[in-house]
Length: 238
Length: 206
Image (cartoon, rainbow over all chains, first blue to last red; front, side):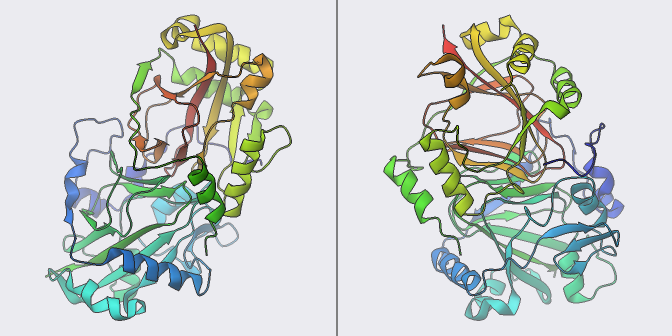
């Protein structure tokens, strides 16, 4: 299979694709070879008083109802558009980072798929999940769960809260007050990868909660045989 | 959704249990020049073997069963493509010389009986969970029990990872070498934005 584009002879520098206000507000080392970092300090605690197994099993059943991953990334050459499933995200702050991964690169709609369950779709789970983060404004928060099938990745990026912006209708994100938390829904399994900055996770437990501080480059992959499930809370701090 | 019953049974039949820890330590760091290997890939790009995960007539039954199981759960040419060099004898000889005799001594491998392969994984592509059949080496030398090393070529970059049983290996420096124990399941992925270059060096211990 021939590549559609030449491989960049120079190393792509992802920092340059991150919105300047994020770089200014949340300085980070941006050096993959840095050893004396504290990127793992974003671990908060393990949420034990919640039935993660039940949530994971429920999520898989819900995905099985339609069998179609709702989300995937692709670059529309004809329209010069960065696409997240059917959404043109050219006007979103994620665009420049997406171009690095998608245009002239090899992330595409075939290797970036995931199922997404969000907010009211959680049904009876919605309220208890929302209530886990009383520090987020109730009318300015979202909960989403990703089921990543084997063979798929979420390319490395810093969060720009594009989905949150679309949901709340904000013209521009105020990164000084936005926050994202992530928990693993199932224990770590073969081929499940997640890097948060220079920290590569291993053997996580269901309920392990991470404060995904803005401005830190991260991504994930599933090269195993079981789905990888994560849940995320995004919102404005009170 | 995900009919992974066959792959799960395959692992269970082989008593593969993540609950049992397997210690995998760095073996040594070879003295290599990453630029030389990346230049080799670009110079010999048209001669690369390009493969993705699917059954092939020259693989062992074990290799093909793993490929079928992987295909069944969604692995295909769109997420497992790999360019590699070394299966052709001239490439093996060139790569062996680039690695250098002193590095094979560090690995305790017989310089005259090695298979060196340079692997290029582009972003978005993974090597699914598998154990090595070592068919290429066995075909060359007829040896039943070779030893396989993973060697990092480039500086580590975000999204470049290897998992060997319950160990996630990352943050490597060029030349870092890890022994992949026989029949141990492992996987790797590139979910960053830069190509991932690694070597597999297979040989017999001296």
